[in-house]
Length: 315
Length: 305
Image 1 (spheres, chains in turn orange, red):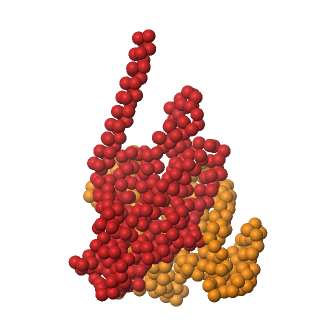
Image 2: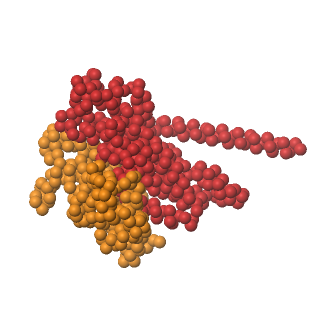
Image 3: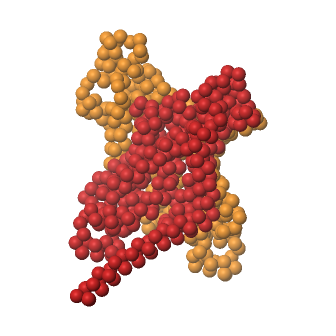
């Protein structure tokens, strides 16, 4: 198990290397003069030159890359152009909001998705099956930011049940936090539960058709015990993998959802920085989000190896 | 002499017979697709929107960019079927023109992703020494949430439709390359490819005629989903202000503008979303149908996203 863990962590190194190269290249593909654009139309050429020197953008690309990597290895992603603070500090401060949104959304979508998938599998080829799968596909087809707006109109404006945006930290009021996270998490969950529902259905159908399930039924075990205990536990394995992949999609979705619901997460920081052309923050947010995703996937793989020993011994 | 003639004659007949069989098979696949319930629903959903978008200049009742200060934020009525926005522009007209942007971007991403993804996937699957390097790069790109990478790239590049296509393609090429690579790896080991190698066929002939021709089904299914995801992602980029710049009537732009008026004029933001959802649902249904009919080996999972 330890060897499996070590191997899995080592395999993340090339991935993180590519991630860092792509992130560094973001500023390189910007057309025109970043400094002039950032300084604004009123800046004099001298001011622009001074700013360029200050930001270190007057050095050759290779030198900048080496400097950037040197700092990166020390956990330093530079200073924000505008916020007068370190990129790592600004992103890390907002990461908990994003991660809690993703976690909340993930739990909701796993619960809803698995319920739909199990329902579809045990009523295979009936209208229940069709209805649940249509619902799953419809969710996947909705633009998440738009669905968030619709929920705001419905539950925030028309019914007035939930706040239309804003954030209450859980340290201040757990109930307030739940209220302001409910709609964003539900938006994420409904647009993503389809992936889980479809996976659960096919995985359950696979398992339900196997001999040991029929044997369990034949010896008189109650239907629910067989489905939920014997079948579902074994159907869980592929579902765990899909949860890992979904985390990435949800991290991307959270970026947009945060902007719709005015949640102070990494996504809103990145979007705000795009309008201000604050590239170090964009790069830092991108890099830290991707690294988070890589580590979540390692965790999922380890979990997977723990559930299913065959995976550990392979390769 | 006569024996030789007979052989030539037979081979001509055989070739004609094979061509006929292939055509029959193609028609058969088409018929089965049309009989597939969800494919049919998807085709109608997507088809209606595509036709409306293509015929936008004829269908749109108003000029999509013309301001009308006498009817600002007008609710849906018989004159303006889907209402107007804060400049008095007709929402229905803006939506049919906006759907054109969505479809153009979608087609663009499908073409770019299809060509580059097929190239990279085939090289990785066929040229063993390059496989590891290429796939590690693809893994690295896939470590970014696709939408987030596209947002960052589109933000760095100047806002334009072409750059949106470029940004989305970078995000979706790795997944497509992976699909192509895995089916090339399977097809490569089939006996008839070995037979072609033994018969002395060159690399180009083996790759194009024998491997790619049979690795296409998963690619077609994958590209349907790429089309769907691109429409969604283009809307996200436009909504966040890094898509085709306003006043271009892209569906995401209309929703972004309507967001300010969500309380008083919810129709501005509402209807474009319905159109996006219908087009994407249509494509997803078609993708499911295609997978059931032309590539039944695949499970019910999706790679795009």
